[in-house]
Image 1 (spheres, one colour):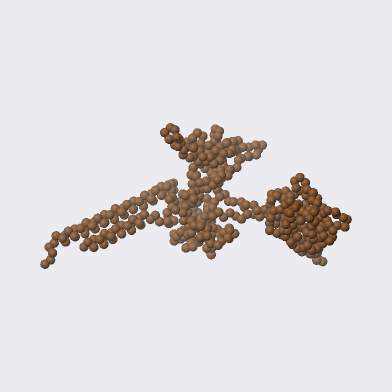
Image 2 (image 1 turned 60 degrees about the vertical axis):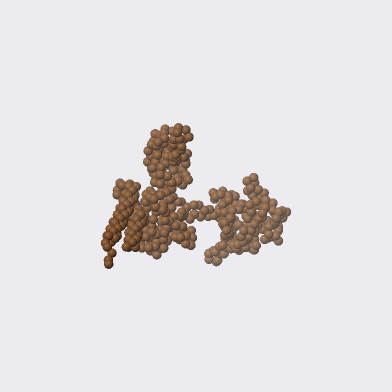
Length: 480
C-alpha cells in the first residue's frame, strides 16, 4: 500500500510540475507581438533582404530591436541577421589634361632617359621646364615628362586622388601610329618607378574608319609626376594627354526622420520630447513654426546626480550631445534655415532641449536615422510576416554567415528585397501597448496560480483518500 501511495504521489507531483512548466512558458508566436507587417517574397529566393520600415522603429520595444521576429505561415521563426547594407560607392573617372614637357636628346639615346635631366620647378613644385644636358640641334624627342598638379585642380579632386589611366591624343595631321611605351612615376622628380608598359595604336582604313587603342591603364595609384618613354616606335609629341582620376563617392543613404512635439521640462526653460526608444538617432534639428528666429541651445538627456550636501538628495543634470545655434529667417526675400547636426548614434526615450535665451517659439525636435537592413532565410511555408512590439524578450537574430554563408558584399547588395504590406496593429485602438503586456502577463500569472492551487488540492485529496484507506485496513482483524 505504501508503494501504491508513493507512486500516486509521484504521479500527482509530476502532473502538477507539467502544469507549472506549461503555464510559465510564454511561447513565441505572431499573436504575442503588438504589430505585424506581411512580407511578400519572390519565388526561388532562399535569402532575401528587407530595409527595416519606419514603423518598426516607431513601435519596437527594445533599443537593439530584440523583439524583432520573422514568422512563416505556420508560426515558425525564420533565422535573420541585421546588417548595414550600404549601397556601393559611386565611381567617377574625371579626365583632365596634364602639363607636358618634351625631353630631347641624341637619337641613339632613344628609349632611355638621362639621369641628369635639368628640371626647373616653381615654388609650388609645378614643373616649368625640362631639358637634357648639352642639347644640340640634332637632338630628337626621347621622352615626355608630365605634371599632374594642374590636372587635379581642374578636375576638382584632391591632389592625392589615385590615377587609373592616361589617354593620349595624336598631333594634328597624324592618322596612323603605333608604339610601345613605358610609364614611370615619381613624387619628387628624383626617384622614378616604372608603373606600366602598354602598346598604343591608331589605324585608319581607306574608307576613313578608324580603330584606336589610345589609353594606358594600370592599377589606380596616386603620383605627382609621370614620364613616358618609347620602347618601340618613333617618338612623337602627343597633342594632349589626359589623366583619368578614380574618385569614389559614397552613395546617398536612405534616411528616415521623425518630428516630435515638446513640453516644458523640469528645469528652467528646458523642453522635453518623448521619442521611440528604438530610433537610433544620428542627426538632430529644430523645426520652428515662426520666422526670424535664432535660438542657441544645448540638447541631450537628463542624468540623475546625487548631491553631497543637502542630505544627499538627487537632482537632474543635462548631459548635452549638441551645442549649436538653430535659426529660421527670411533675408533679402530668401528663406534661410539651419540644417540638422550630426550626433553619435543614440537611443533615448526622452530628449531635452535647453535654450540659452528666452523661448518665444516652442520648436519641434527632428531626429534622423539610417534604417538597418534585415537578411533572412525564406524557409518554412510562405507567406511570411515581420513581428515586433513586445517587451522583455531576448533577441533571436544570428550572425550574417549563419543566414547567407559565402555571400560576397556585392551579392548581398544585389539580394532581392521583400515587399512589406500594410501594418497590422494587434491591440485595441487607443489602448497602450504596455496595458496589453500587463494584461497578458497578468492573465498568465493568474492561470499559473490557478494551476498550482489546483495541483496542491488534488494532491492533498489523494493523500487524504489513501490515508483513510490505510487506516480502515489497519482496523480490520487479520484473516484466520
